[in-house]
Length: 211
Image (cartoon, rainbow, N blue to C red; front, top):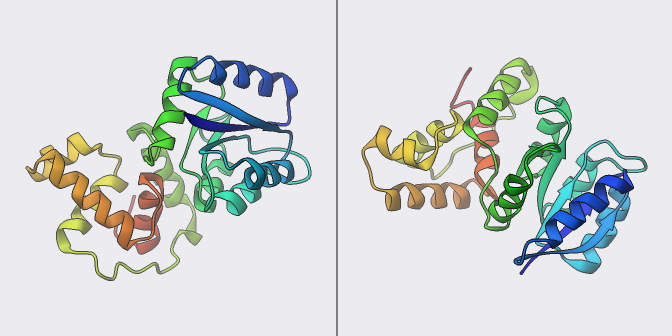
């Protein structure tokens, strides 16, 4: 059973998300929070697998809350606008991905499962938008190193940063699915990244990809 914490300052939305999540046999809501401060406290007491996190909230916003809990629970950002600048800050803070609040119910539930499985939820089109955003932000370079990363792993990292799926990487490098998964797994470990979303950010902070 995947445990979920719902965080949104609108009670109606929290209730809707709760009903949706609880309707799935493999998902269960373990709590609700109306702001980031409450979310941090509930994560510590309930230990959810996934936190559905709003961004703009009173007292403490979703970005700061994500920064404080990302090491304990996986965070899936729910936002009204897919190009909301706050989303990028949330990913830097440790979020594993994001979805729009009007995402179809089936896709939202699938997103929760994806995040719980340790995969970043960034579709190729969304990744490309993230790339464009980094391209507009001069502060994106923070001199992150790639010590220990092999040349082949570097190639895989570049392709991930360009928004390619594992299947597309297989075709581009002419390798098996198992080989791609192995490279991705090693990159996650070497770059201390939680998921694919963090690898995209790592690639740009290392300066290995430009828009």
